[in-house]
Length: 238
Image (cartoon, rainbow, N blue to C red; front, side, top):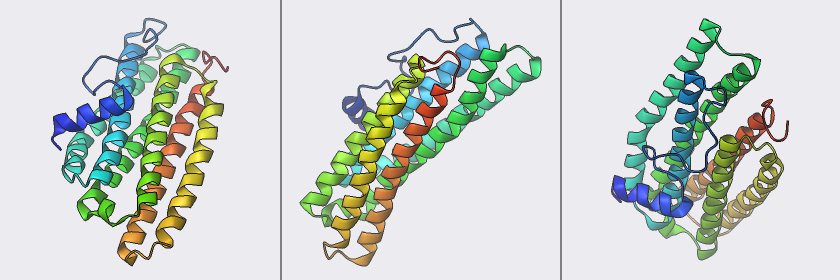
């Protein structure tokens, strides 16, 4: 799959914007009109879109055996790290200049805590995509493939909801995301049991146990984003 195809496939799966596209469902960036807040908001939108796209493309790659997607996601790591560093610089500059009011400061510090969650989540999606090069999808039982598809779709739904939660400052999304995370945990357990009982080569079983764990962690990170949103003073749950 080419880079363009990976982006289109992810967008089709999620309805999310591409990394250079305009944000989807957003609030007015930077409620106070602060240029720093507007810049951070735009960067957060970009990172969230990259995570959603990466997860959708990684699941498709694993099931189809498309080994090119991992290279595409790896090439985007530099962009993720660049945006991460930009957010850090912007927040540090705003704090050093003493410009934020207490509400703005809490938002900027929350962004600093969310960005590592996004970086790790993009890396996890890349790890899933790398397994496509091993031909794991061809080794799996139909039930295991169905479980991976369900976990991928659930993960994408969770990350879309986490993104919407950030855009809208909707702290009420946390409870629903926690419920979905419980479902992801259950699917993780079922997939590990299915793989263990399928008589697969030990190397395949070990790799699939890792894949199941990657999806579980992706769900955890989405919940963490919503938890941080719920702590913001302008959150609808605040």
